[in-house]
View 1: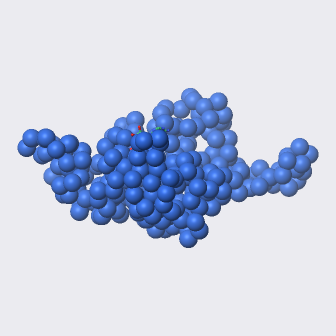
View 2 (view 1 turned 180 degrees about the vertical axis):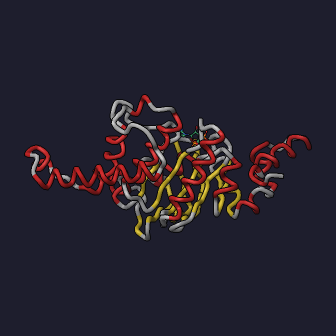
View 3 (view 1 turned 90 degrees about the horizontal axis):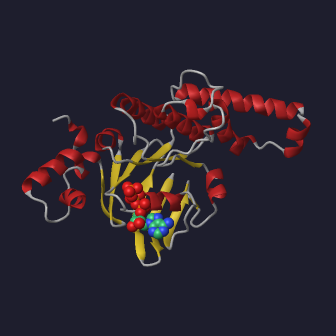
Length: 269
Ligand SMILES: Nc1ncnc2c1ncn2[C@@H]1O[C@H](COP(=O)(O)OP(=O)(O)OP(=O)(O)O)[C@@H](O)[C@H]1O
């Protein structure tokens, strides 16, 4: 579903992404991890058309979308959530998710102005779809209330429901576990798996190694924009280059052991 080939992105002199290649198939979960500033979000921004890559190729479902506009890439079935939650706080829960349906409902302005039967039908369809996704993400409670009045963890679910309401083939989740408590993280893990079971390809940026190791089919590791590992979680967690990336070269034995624990987070040992 997603193929990234030798992706490069530079900001002036800084190579934020330096030759990244990876793919995500339908029904697959691939995590992109790495220390702060490794280039993860920059890579996602290239995939969504937010940034224009300096070099390399990006294909969605076989079509080359390198350097294309975000609206075109969204229309090709790419949806995302953001590191810093982006919801419309002053809109209702339901309207936030209905906003996601506008990508495919294709309402015409003239129908909206005249409130034609066609417009009312499509509004109903959008509402049903939004309610379906709110059920799917497990958002209980008042859907007519403003999003800003929800607890943080529930606002995150609204953002995911909105991304799903766009009917994506590929979903990019940028640090979805940030700010969630233990119970909410367990629910997120289950939600990500259920999204995968719908046949949607998922690319995940996440710092919570427990979650990453538990949920991912493959893990791609970036350091200073370069890909230093790509493989199943059990392979990546034991990779010395990965441990070093999280630590730096001068770490002592105790620090190495602590990093091993972190990267190996979900083993339950
Ligand atoms: N708009 C920008 N202009 C200039 N430099 C940028 C810009 N965005 C990112 N960078 C630089 O590119 C590099 C990669 O940043 P990026 O945010 O992609 O890393 P990251 O892996 O997502 O980090 P984090 O885990 O902290 O979110 C960093 O050196 C960063 O300072």
